Amino acid sequence: MRVMRNALLGALAFAAAAACGVAPAHAQALTPAQKDEVRTIVREYLRQNPEVVEEAMAELERRREAARRVRIEGDARDFAVGPRNAPVTIVEFFDYRCPYCHESMTWLFEVMRRNPQSVRVIFKEFPVLGETSVEASQAAVASIKQGKYLAFHRALMAHRGQLNSAQIDTLARRAGMDVARMRRDMEDRAILDHLQANHEVAAESKIDGTPAFLINGKWVRGWNRAEADRLLAEALRETRRR
Image (cartoon, rainbow, N blue to C red; front, side):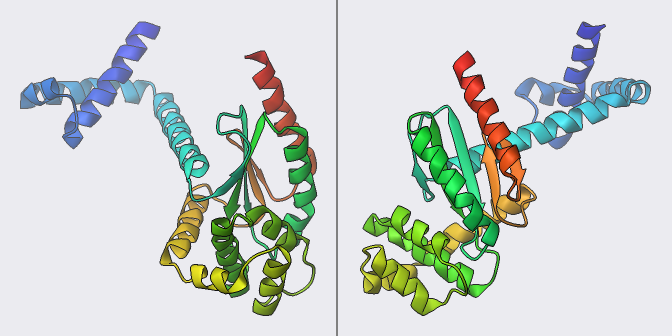
C-alpha cells in the first residue's frame, strides 16, 4: 500500500511538473494521450484519497518555512554574535521603541553570556513603530562600520522614554561613535534596502509585532520568557544528543 501511495504521489508531482513545463526532459516526450492518462490516474487517486492534498500542502509549507529560515539566518548584513557553526541560533526581530524588546534584552544577553560557544544570536532590525524607529535602526546598522553595534544596541535598548534624533546622537556618542560619520553612513540606500528585506521576510513569516524570536526554527511571538526558555532548553538538549 505504501509503495503504491508513493508511486501515485510521484505521478502527481510528475504530472504537475509536466503541466507547468518544468518536468524532467523525458516528461516532455509524453504524448497528449499519455498526459491525459496520467491526469486521469492522479485525479481518481485524489478523489479517493483527498487527505493527500492536505499532506502535500503541509509539506509545501514545511519546505517554505525551511527556506525562510535559511533567508532569515543567512543574511550577512545582520549583526550577529557567536560562532557561525553554533548548534543553536536565535534570531530576534526588534524595535528600539518597543518596551517588550527592552524587557527581553536582559534575557538575550544572559543567554549569550552563558552559552558563548553553543548559541549564535542574530539581531534583526525590524522598526515598526514609526519614523524614529526607522532612524534608530538606520543608525544601528551604520554603527556596524565603526565596530560599535553591540554597545550602541545596548544603549538604545536601555533608553527609556521618548526617542528622537538628538537622543540617538547622544547615545551614539556615549557608545564611542563618530556621530558625524554615523550620520553620513545612514544616508546609504543599502541600509534602507536591508531594513526593507527584514520587513519582507517578517511579513512572509506572519510577524507583525515585536519582539519575535526564532529559536532553531521555532517561533516565539511577543515576549514570553517561559516559552523562550523552554525552546532554548529544548534546542540545547537536542544538540547534546547528536
